[in-house]
Image (cartoon, rainbow, N blue to C red; front, side, top):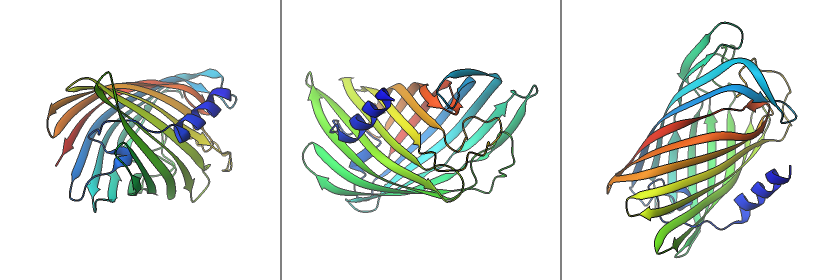
Length: 276
């Protein structure tokens, strides 16, 4: 628990440093600006973390392919609207034969408002609405909880220069609550970006989804990415290649480095970032 506590402190208290990336983070979008991310995502896991955080074999492999369009629109210079859409292809052969499901997972619609800004720092408030899309909760593997939910949080950004190169830290912490049986969660995250070259940016991220164990303990089937009270720490490393003034390509790998009642796998994603 010591490293989890340290992560919470860092994600909430460390000021955020960073050059403006295309995805605006705590900075939001300027009025009328539109940002679109088209992401293709792959995850696989043949092991899981049990309720005590110990690694166990699943007896099969869970795989997930995901197409994830994400949109930001500057409604005003202080307010940004966001929309996050997920279409998943899931497969799991832990039962001895392969089971497959595909369809739209929960949609996340959000609003973000800047409450403070200086030359290098910005502070924003964020709200999200989690909207189920009508999938069958009895599917195996399942696409989600089939519960409405909401998340509120605070975001902090800080831009800086290191070795005369632009950098940033974008961090935040949120509280997510489902209107049903799943556990509520604390969700801190921190992203570090730095440009060693003019058109290449290094991205590193740590993200924690920490279930508070105030939901039902009811098992949701063999899909260990959808347990009600899971806890997960994920680390990501990526590169952002600027293709032109309005377009960049992000390629990243990630790994689940700690958890309880969740998959112990990893994967990769590629994302095309477009700005209008």
